[in-house]
Amino acid sequence: MFVILGLLVVVVILFGVPLWMMVVYNQLVTLRNLVETAWAQVDVQLRRRHDLIPNVVETVKGYATHERETFEKVIQARNAARDATNPQAKAEAENALTGAIKSVFAVAEAYPELKANQNFLSLQGELTTTEGFIAQCRSEYNDSVLTYNNTLQVFPANTVAGLFKFQHREYFGVPEGGQREPVKVQF
Image (cartoon, rainbow, N blue to C red):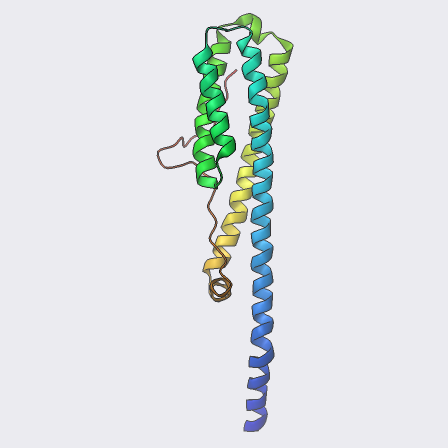
């Protein structure tokens, strides 16, 4: 009886533990891939936003040529946002870019003929739509990060995560001291 029980324990240890580790490892890989896919979607929308901004600036420039400093700040903010590499840096740069975009639209308010321009209205609509997509993708990314990070931290999955060096991921959020209310683009 004890021999059979001992044999059963040995079989469970030899086969059960590696099988369990394989299942947990695969779950962690799947969650990590979901985080990376969600980040790629955020990046796609941010690139779309970055591509729209020069068109908006050029359209407004045609009407407000004396606002050169405002336009330069927008382009600098766009370049900084495009070059940011991790979620924390991206969040900070994107918040700065949002502020710069607001200044362009504040300039546009002073030019009624610009606000009636079809190209400007089209760009305005695309930018508004893109801001919505960014918010949605950001939320999906942060949800993926939450699930992934929770799995990394709970026992017994944390033992497998530590063994295979799975890394904690950053949220794409508002940096400390940053804006805590929804981004509003005023046209």
